[in-house]
Picture 1 (cartoon, rainbow, N blue to C red):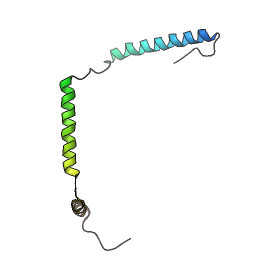
Picture 2 (cartoon, rainbow, N blue to C red):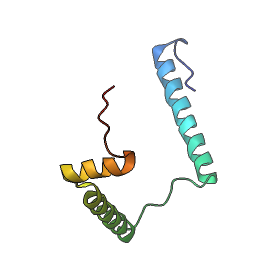
Picture 3 (cartoon, one colour):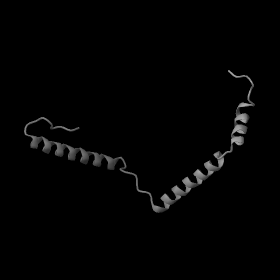
Picture 4 (tube, rainbow, N blue to C red):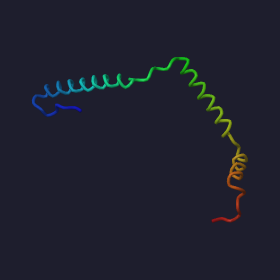
Length: 88
């Protein structure tokens, strides 16, 4: 919450703004530490493992969904059955 705009001298208002902003930040930091704070930064090995896993998954999806037109039509026919001659 910011308190201080519109009360007296503009310099006093700015000072009140800085004080309340600093207090709010300090209170936030104090309560964040009690809740566990910020999560620990990942190590290089963890980041490397994450990106290798993402690359493996991307390759898997690419292989699974890189289809020709005929394969697409075949999959649609498998899911929905052969096309009917009736047009709505």
